[in-house]
Length: 273
Image 1 (cartoon, rainbow, N blue to C red):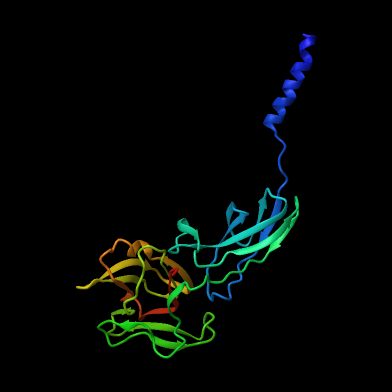
Image 2: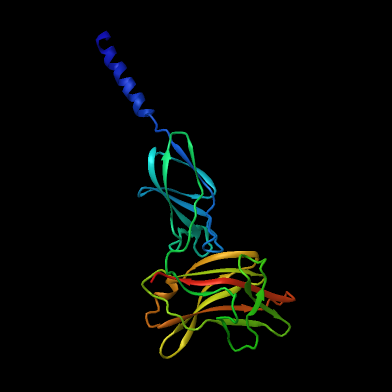
């Protein structure tokens, strides 16, 4: 038995190392909210963190995250959004530039990052920010349209569009001119809105013979200005017979309210050339 004792001790020590292996010591990265003055209004909620080409994780910001990396590293942070305003469809937004930075990580130390972003080149294909004379939207079959309101205290711009339904006004719809939207690329609608009544976002499909509306999504009441990123490609690609599309907003008056209100601003169609 004594002859086997050293062997048993070695086996026990080896087993302990397997059960409790030596753990790497993490470094920490503190990520602040994105600075986004170059894109105007934004709703960046997540940081997609890469070191070199390795995804470290997706984190709500601001946040302090551990990483099992040390020394000189290339840090990339992609701005993350809620696609269609839904928490379950979080994604890194393809039209925001990734933050890049060389960092020197040390075990147990915290590196502080203030990320910033801007739009990638030539991605905004159509825009209405209500800052000029007139509007790119046309009212459909009704004598009332989008009123231009100047107010520098709202958002970061000097104007927005206002739609009010009161009295005998029970329905409002406005559309853009027909716009080219590619079927083989990612297409998004960005907009800021505030409303006390739900409204529909539609796309009119244009073919050589006719135009038909297709519902994209229903947006609900928002007491404060809300930014949303709507993925349009899934509503464009199936319509292989369409030549162009028009963006449309449709709202019906809520009979329980004295007036239904919709404010819109910074409406953009984006895709890569």
